[in-house]
Length: 226
Image (cartoon, rainbow, N blue to C red; front, side, top):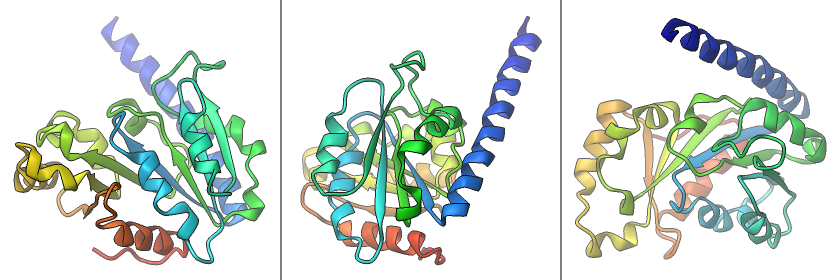
C-alpha cells in the first residue's frame, strides 16, 4: 500500500511536469518571463506587488492571481491598470491549496501573453504544496515575514530550497518582535546556502527598490545581483 501511494504521487508529479513544459513553451513563444510568487497566507505578497507593478518602467507586466475563493487581491492589483486574471482553485479544482501546471494552463487563453514581458503568478498562500508543483515558470520567489518566526526554513525546507529569491518582509516590525534575524538567515543558509535574499517592508517601502530592480533584471533576462 505504501509503495502504491508513492507511485501515484510520482505519476501525478510527472504528469504535472509534462503540462508545465507545455506552459513554458507557450510562455517562451510569447517572450514572457514568468515568476511564481509564493508564501504563507498573510506574508504580504499582494502588498509587495502593489508596491512595484505600476513602476516597472518599460516592462509590460501582468498578474495571474491564485486563490481558493474570491477576487479581493486581483481587484487590488487591477487598480494599477495592469492585466490581471483571477484563478480560483475552488471552482472546478477541488479547492486545492496551490496552483499546479494544469490550473495555469486553463488560464493561459485569458492572458494577453503577446502584450506582456513579465507575468507574475501569485500562488495560493501555503508553505508546502506550491513548492512541489512546477507551473512553467522561469523563477520562483517566496516571501517570509518576520512574524512567522526564525524556524520556518527548517520546518518547510522544500519551499526555501525551491526558490531563487527570498523576500524577508515586515522588517519594520523587528523592534516589536522577539525575532532573531541573524538566526533566520542562518537557518535559511542551512537549507539553501547562498540563496538571494532581500530585506523589505511593504509598509514603509524599505528594500522595495531592490525588489523592483530584481524584477526588472528578471524581465530583461539579465543575471541577478547577489
